[in-house]
Length: 116
Image (cartoon, rainbow, N blue to C red; front, side, top):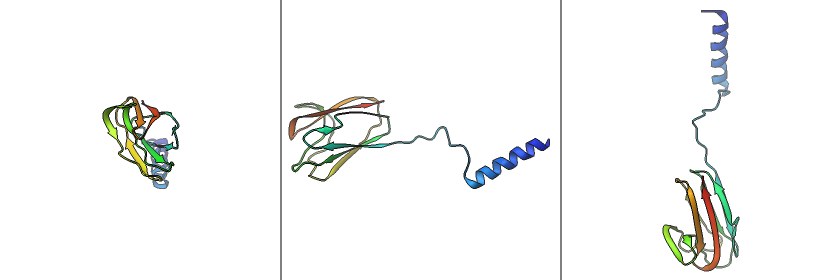
């Protein structure tokens, strides 16, 4: 075996030993995004990747919900139930698409989530 092959093998072993190996290109990372609920959803529109999680945090003084569908017309995809003040509701999205949602307790409050 040529000397340069031994050097390459040695360098590879050294890199693996000290944790410098190249990252796995197949490794999937996910993110968590927070939507604040305080008289509106903020941000009101959000784009995330498949596998990401959205956490809604209720910063209001009364209970709110996160219900999929358009105002007054839930589509049954998800419904947080009442989220108490200071509490959160989280959901991980595994399918691409555009999702509208609203609060059943403040019907003028709505948001849109795009999952790519």
